[in-house]
Amino acid sequence: MNSTILAIDLGKFNSVLCWFDPDARAERFRTTPTTPDDLRREFTRQPVARVVFEACSQAGWVHDLCGQLGVPAVVASTTGAAWQWKHVKRKTDRDDARKLARLAAVGEVQAVPVPPRAVRQWKSLIGLRKRLVSERVRGQNRIRGLLVSQGLPAPAGAKAWTALGLAGIGQLTRPLGDCGPDDLWRGELHLLLERLRALDAQTREVEAALDALAAGDGRVSLLETVPGIGTRTAEVIVAHLGDPARFRSAGEVGAYAGLVPRQYQSGETDRRGRITRRGPKLLRAALVECAWCSLRYNAWARETWLRLQGNGLSKKKAVVALARKLLVRCWAILRTGRPWQPPTPAAA
Image (cartoon, rainbow, N blue to C red; front, side, top):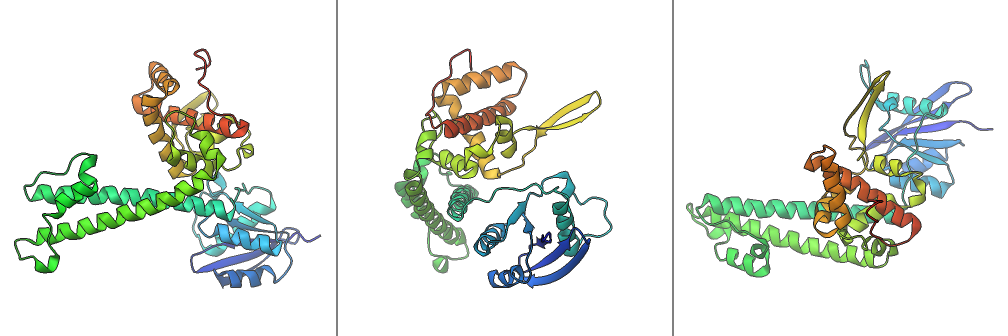
């Protein structure tokens, strides 16, 4: 029976492959460009029991390639203690591939599930919308700062960034080529305003595509029954949790989002620290933002938040704890397929 393990240290341009035979403890290395054609050729060079590589930006299409070739693939999580490179004299790509192969041989590789290609692209589009919104906010702040530096009132409120508000700001602009030495700020404002309009148009286009995807997914509509959770937060939760059955308990769900405290336990010492912040940052940020909004629209969320503060937590820590509880309830809704039901006071 073939037991050879092919471990790959994936790089942006080149990857290092290590064929490792656990029985003979023999290893062989090869460097190849990180392209589908080159990796396809290496995967078919000799039969292997499985292919192992780290979770990274290229892991998705490499996993799909293994599926097309019928080769078992394992995507390894790099958050475990075994991956901590500390106090080592040397660290090379070969060392990474060798270490991955040997960990796989003794069963110490923690595999992570790889979502289907459509889900990965959905998550990528959600992340793009988040980046566009952040860039738009930075653009608005740059316009405010420029106007304040010229002794003009800064735009305030949401109405300042509507079409009418931008038209008013546009009256102060002038093409940069038509500006004199004393009016260069008008040309700068003209460029910033054009960029802001372009970002706003791109954001609307992405949101329209996300709305169409969310309308065709019943899981998003199910989570929208939770007071305080809108379409944008619901799609983030659905895209990242995927199949709710892959989580065995509420603790695993909270740990996946990085919303559980760090723990150091030895003998009689048992300390709890800050949250681990492992897992998808986008999911964690959306949950905390949703937790703040839920204080206004969700009676259960506000009661839970006040109770956590009564137990000694600060406002911000209580919101983080509330975000974890919201995620667990959303997971339960997805698992059972039943919409939100306000908990009874005793259960809350």
